[in-house]
Length: 146
Image (cartoon, rainbow, N blue to C red; front, side):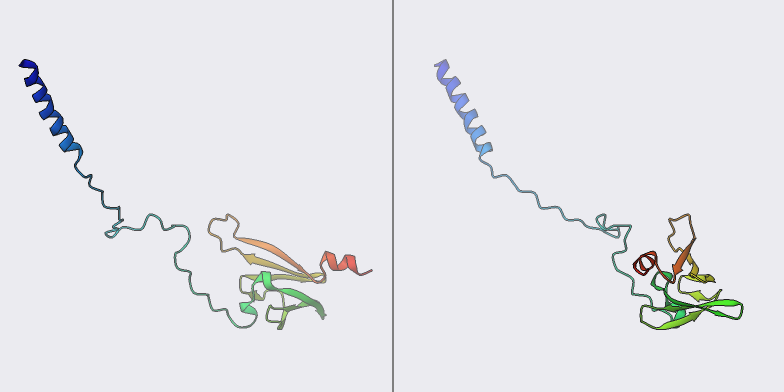
């Protein structure tokens, strides 16, 4: 009779364990980020999320950057040189030493072309300006013609 009591106790214990294991597991709710006044950690801090509107360019020579200038001619007037340059809009301008362009200044006009000082607007660069030479004829043009 003792064995029967032991069997009965184990049956009751087994029934309790089976009842607990049958319980349906509760699925956790998916995670949602709630900023509550904080910035989104997935948005880059380096580049702005909204592009700034394009800057309105000045009219004439003041709206032409150094990289867009093409030298079309060099003239000597009395004892000074002046250069004829062409802008991207196909307009021609006469420039003298000291004239301002959008991102620089005409340093010198020489018989071979133009020397400009370009202002560099990169805050991470230690160099704040550089010298740019715009020649009347490039080396490729000189090689093609005898």
